Length: 132
Image (tube, rainbow, N blue to C red; front, side, top):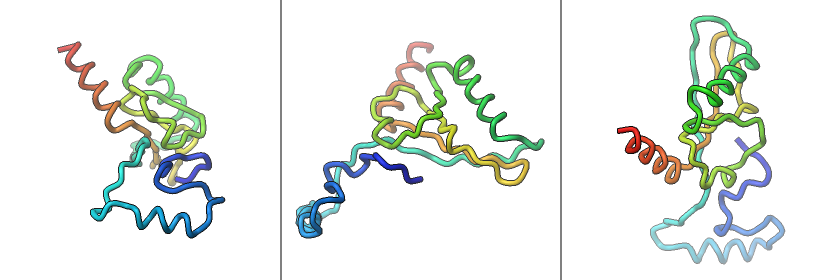
């Protein structure tokens, strides 16, 4: 998924206005092992095959309701155009990207779910400890 404004590679590569020579100098300066710390959230694709035919708007409404009630504080739902840098520091284990929900045929749904791999996981562990 590509959305303008993403800062996934911020600090690694500059803006598109920089010269190619500057970019090449930055690539040559990378550690020999090629390991570079990249800040940003992650997302995963979830594909569900359902028993009954569904409408994408109904799926989004059901997920939004569940995030506000049953899974409040654990899962969130958004209809904003988020990019990877928007997820940093978000305590939810999963943030469903409602704009990316797609129907494939009449019974298959594809979801894209954002998460902050480190912070979101740490918050989940704290929640588990509090309720243990």
